[in-house]
Length: 604
View 1 (cartoon, helix red, strand yellow):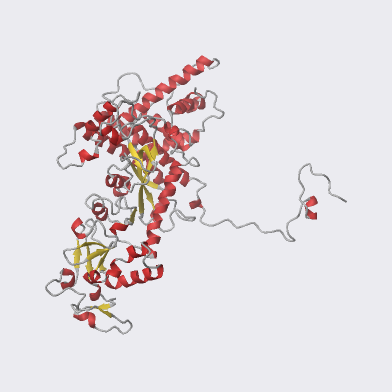
View 2: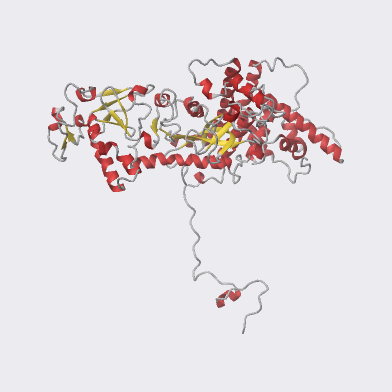
């Protein structure tokens, strides 16, 4: 039953703040244009809407900003019983003369607003719902779910084949998902713009990570069992069957396999891009805001969601491009042509992590240069296996920490020296054999000038047996410099533009991405937005779950920007000083004996 007697009236300034945010984002015009494009709005005739698209979105944002459940039932209470007449006038809501002295009158009034708001929200959701054929008024059977799998291309084993041709419904779904991401990113950027001039102090570093939001799935059979035909066709599936299984234990978050550790859940996954950099997220620095978002099924196209979460940054060339920090799902987990190459073209330096099986010699370029743990080295590295396997040996306990760091320092002697920065808009970069550089620490039989003595630095001679023979020399040994193209063939999948992997400098750079974990927690935890609780967003449908996620992300950003945020107070307050002569004690405390309520009098 609806709560018909809210204890407090709505605060107009809070509602107006939500309205200003929505207006600044431009999402109302966006939705209206989509409705015209889809033929859902053909003219201005007919009865005026009780609740406009703008008001519906404002109400949704308001519920998130005030940390209340994102439910139509709660929104109807706000309008019916929480708004004073002048507030309803401001939002063009009808002030009807209704008898609220009776229970039936109050229930009818609340129900009227419930259905009006529901219809208004439906006008918004319809433009972004990828799967309009899926009912939100009841649960489908397994047989119906299998039809959806083919209709919308939800079986990754089929869609990954080169011969696969997407259906019209699948193309429409992709279009609607892109709309939803644009809607989300516009709202989020409206919060980032509240930084004002402070945004100019950001160095452009970003971190990207996906986080899952559980949705109700009572009695939902295992996906692989349903695909294999092991589940009776009349069984019911989840109320939002177009989402998927999420596994925290899997590197790719794909939980479609049968759960082995009990960590699987039916969920949608939001990919957030957050602001990182020196001082970001620390006292006196900028808060680590969520810059953008993309929503999809768990493990579905992580590369696409990562790029879409950065849409706001890509659309603004004036913003700096710093480091891109991602876990192993992204770097090097994705195909280079899908993620690493576009990111380098956009101007990012990539810093990632590697699985144990990916450590050591990762690839060899046509020029003869080799990639070891994400860095480019002289071909001599192949002859020094202790250097190649240093990280693997350390992680497996075969060498100690001191020896490991000593080997990492030894590697630097063979590391190719970069000549300038990557070419803007392309990502390719020139490198030089270290023996040819002015800071050379080795002499090479193939480089005559490297044998010149340095007055302040001894050089280590490379052995004839280590260097390639004259007939086997690649361009890296013959030329004064080489160009490493931004392509999969030139190691784009593994190359790391930050400090060498495993060094203390790399640890400092990479571990800055931990900030995004606290953003995920702030969105999901009941201490903040509570979006991790499915009962806070009991709305069926893909679009409803996606929009509710961005509303919580918007509220998270506003919370970080609020007057209580530490970034507004760069200096710690001065601690209070002790009064001259010390603090005065109270009554019987002077005896050194604690006094408690109702205690007997002290002995004389």
